[in-house]
Image 1 (cartoon, rainbow, N blue to C red):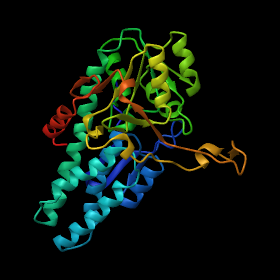
Image 2 (cartoon, rainbow, N blue to C red):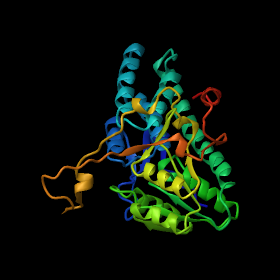
Image 3 (cartoon, helix red, strand yellow):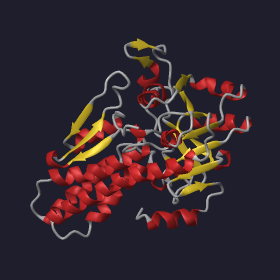
Length: 349
């Protein structure tokens, strides 16, 4: 299966390269990002999106900043680097991986004794984070693949594939790993209103890999469950707190429907997405602009003057989750948060 590299560091150009996901499925465009301002714009415009990919973007963002700062004195260099890191962290509020990736690299450079050493440590740390993300997705994929039966049908929401990570994917990484092991798997991809990440991105990825995929309206999921056409639901996550899973808006609806129809509901997420220190009420859910719902291209979909609520994420209680699939194994609720914190510590997270 061809590896799809979503985001990478280009050393000789001192630049981040990433796939501009806003152009898919009709236009594949690789962007060379040479400034922190451009990276922040890309994150806010969803050119780069998906929790693990945002973690890698945050890490590479600090590295990029370190190569662009022109201060010659170490203390001043570090002050500017901290300011740039703070700007990157706040580009989007809900997914924890973005701030996590920034903080991991900043932690590595804080004890540097020179600008040269700080830049070197930033590069080492950021590249390690990208490599660890790829490993985590492959490990997670193998654990999850064991839960899929040969000939089974998976329903997924939004895009938790290679485009949401550095490569391979979480929810779609499980599908890929199952197919690699010889199983025949088909996928229902919910279109995922309003930006259609399922229809545009998930379908594009799976078609590219030759995996059978059918796009459905988000509102058709419950009916297909009722008809017995869905074996299990697998979604990704932007943050897992002690009491809820934050993922693309619509996830909670699928979890409720899956529970009613006795269908397993799995959350595929690396440990970097777990947030042991917060409860759901402490997390800000991003609310995006009216135009994403009110228009399609130049065509108005909502009458002028009518209000729109456009939350990017919702929260699903743990009691609706059959299990969390991570790079260390399958974890069934209730989650042992001491064990999660221990595993994150062992991984340096």
